[in-house]
Amino acid sequence: MTIRYIDDMQLTGKRVFIRVDFNVPLEGRRITDDTRIREALPTIQKALDLGGKVILASHLGRPKGVEPKLSLEPAASRLSELLGGKHEVILADDCVGDGVRKLVKDQKEGQVLMLENLRFHKEEEANDEAFARELASFADVYINDAFGTAHRAHASTAGMVPHVKEKGAGLLMRKELEYLGGAIKNPAKPFVAILGGSKVSDKIKVIESLLPKVDALLIGGAMAYTFLKSQGIEVGKSRVEEDKLSMATRLLEAAQRLKTSLVLPIDHICSTELGDKGPLREVPDRAIPADLIGLDIGPKTRAMYAEHIRNAKTVVWNGPMGMFEVERYAAGTRAVAEAMVANKNAVTIVGGGDSAAAVNEMGLGVKLSHVSTGGGASLEFLEGRELPGVKALETK
Image (cartoon, rainbow, N blue to C red; front, side, top):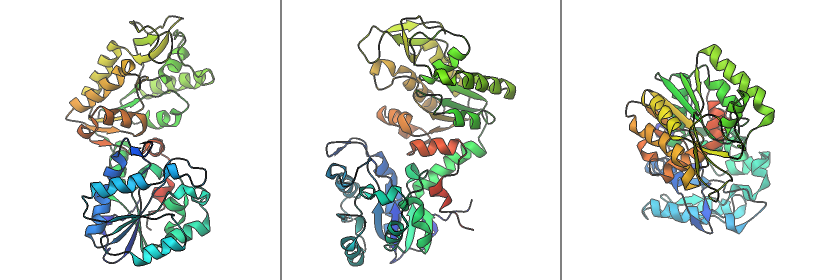
């Protein structure tokens, strides 16, 4: 694919519409993790340095119509702080309409105009043509820096792009495509992938895509119990997708044919109930007693997975190893993160979602090669699927 990037463009005096991903977690009006805003800063700053008049657009949450609690006001305030007060950040009261048009017309050099939550209008997700054209009318240049929404064909990620004179990608988008694309197309070997999470069904396409490429695929999280049960191993009351047992068997057989190591847990941390109420039990074998639920990988599995990671040259990880949000079941997820950090000779990539949240919470994200800002987008990219928001940026 051929995509222009913002640092190769002439932006002086031009209105630069940047689709960012400021879909940040909130507690009331307080942002609890500003990673996505900080990751967008280099692109925003580059556009300002190149003399562009910056217009930012994002969604936040899943509003049903206009919901003041999902206003982008906290994001605008945080962005103003991160820009060090050097650039005035103006929050529009909508993302379309005459009021926005006047703000765009009156915008001065150095000011940053942030449009209000795109999803206050149902036309955004519907990729409505008239809505897309109105967004496009504000811009001379379109830049997409929102990898986290690139798997959605919405008005601001795909529909408006053909109606803007120039198009390109931001610096975060470039980083995402280079790291994830490099892992898929030309990884340094040995290549180890780690997949966790609760459902095999969420990861089937990723597993199918990765099996021919990786040297080892390490499985953790609740999805591991579906694989174990498919081999006839008792998993107690652990979560199992009964309708995916035959699929798990087929994937294990495919790995054997490809001579790829598909590695499953050999011990477990369990309890009699979910959460932190029941007694904590370490099960030293693959089989889990009938009264127990598997909630994390055990110490022998942690050591085994760390050994695979230690010998790798490329590591891609998506999905936690257990119920990491409960501290006593976070050891497996932490062990994988620490093993990746310890391997200074590998390209280490975390593919967004819960695993990205976990490494950032542990303070380890900055020590890895790349932590993706896209959960669903990174998964679909690893599956080998075409992302509409990336496709829209391609030039002939």
